[in-house]
Amino acid sequence: MSIEPEDRHHPRLEGKVIVVTGAGSGIGKATTDLFREHGATVIAADLQGAEHQADAGSEEDVLRLISMAREEHGALHGFFANAGISGGLASIFEQSPEDWQKILRVNLIGPFLAIKHAAPVIKEQGGGSIICTASVAGIRAGAGGPAYSASKAGVINLVKVAATQLAGSNVRVNAICPGLIETGMTKPLYDMARAGGKAELIGQLNPLKRGGEPPEIARAALFLASDESSYVNGHALVVDGGLSVSHPFHRQVYGQTSF
Image 1 (tube, rainbow, N blue to C red):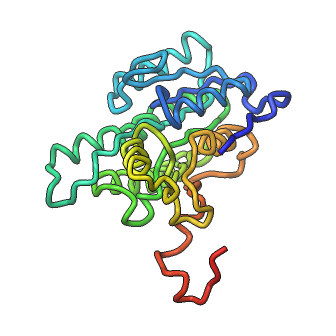
Image 2: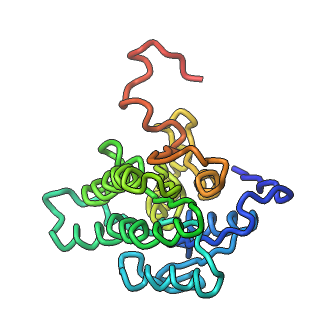
Image 3: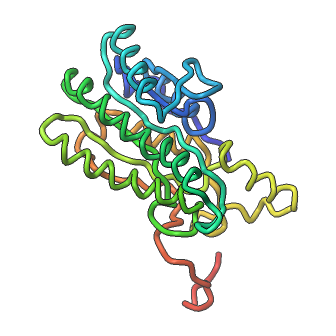
């Protein structure tokens, strides 16, 4: 599927300074590129593959990124806490406490640190936007491993609590819940389907009947980072092709015609 670039004649983030974690590939890289196309100065961070090496679950590294924004660019208007790890699909009974600690550290403590330290700085600039990557796995079972799913459910609740505790600050906090997106994290699934000649089955559980691409999530992040979403706060924006709108069902049971 071809994703056309946004209209560069109307930059939506002109003059804004934004930190993006998990920016080395996939959703983070696509978002970094799109934010820059729209006039933002982006501090792109990742463990590898990005301009700045940082561990999203490290308080020291998060503080360093925020300090960099202030010292090198004079401001911080947004933070996209996107970094995450899957941890695989092992069951609850196969995972160890150490597995959970590793996954929660990046996926949930990372966004917590971003909110805790970025919000006061963003408030100084008169307000702005913090975005956290959650997942449809945080909404219902069946879309990820136990620790991953629990961490993403935590992110969804975290942004609601944060938005409430930041009342009056003009700092908005929202989450994006991607569905099946082709990234480094989902590469094994895509590779397995293609190797088995079943690539056409990817994404068939959602009404659009296809998987998504990183630029489609980046566009959602662009909306939430821009002033166009100025009245959107404490919200989990689902971008999944309709996957989570219903429980699994067989179409013939309801007498529906498959087009």
